[in-house]
Amino acid sequence: VNCDVEELPSLPGFKLTVTAKLKGQTGVEMEALTAVSIGLLTIYDMAKAIDKSMVINHVRLESKSGGKSGDFTRTDS
Image (cartoon, rainbow, N blue to C red; front, side, top):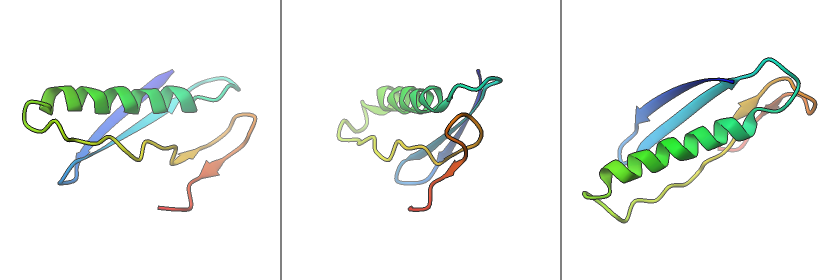
């Protein structure tokens, strides 16, 4: 599994995007969602001294292509 992580400060907060690629027919969504979750938890850990009331939300699949279930692109915001 190859993963690329992109952190985008979008005050107030962060947007963390992970792109995961896999050669095979199994889904890679869980690996991407796990990578985002770990990245956001790492940011929380580093910033908790400043603000313990931070909230991690909107961890979601935006799009995928290939695999048994085919392509998916989120249509809601």
